[in-house]
Image (cartoon, rainbow, N blue to C red; front, side, top):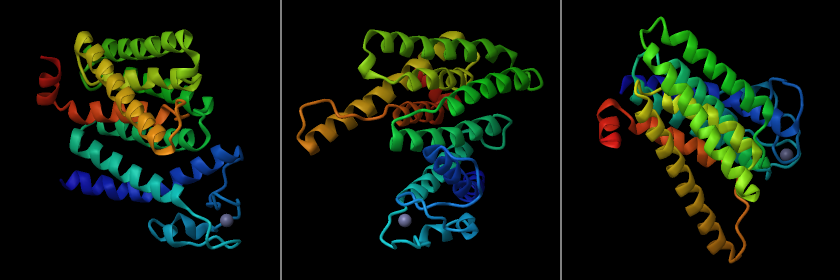
Length: 257
Ligand SMILES: [Zn+2]
């Protein structure tokens, strides 16, 4: 419980900085440490980095401009960090999964707004992830999790790659580039290759169920018969987060019996 509260607070402090990453990625600009109004691009100044307070800053050009992006980034970061705290406790695994969740929040919000998963984020996430798996497994005595992690990455990347080739409109190439990172971290939860593959498949199923239901919901709400253009990235991230959350040792037994 304490770990969840501490990490939730950490998420609240980190949230504004992740918001800046989203800003700059959406606008394709170099990093500068202040927030901009998502609607007109005017600067909100350095005080926008103060947690919570920055929700209440008003755009100098038009106070009616909405700043939902920052509130959403903060809420998602706090929730993801608290979740990681509950799942891992004060354990060496906490660090890598916090890094994953921070990257997923940034990538999901960018994908949601622009329908793009940027190479500048997907590739480094995978490389850093593989580095962490290789670097941390030895000192922590979990070498038996290296193969499950790598196989998880190959399976998730492979399945989405095939799906993309079979039906290009269904997925973006960015989704295919994100998938190995998700498979890596989901597979890393287990020391057993088969369990890892199962967990990856569950993550995939949850992602496509949530994405599909949301698509159907949007279609009904907008009364369009065509498939709504929804970005899959946030749902892939959510599916992996759900499986990471429920895969506590006892739940893993349940999931894989
Ligand atoms: Zn504005």
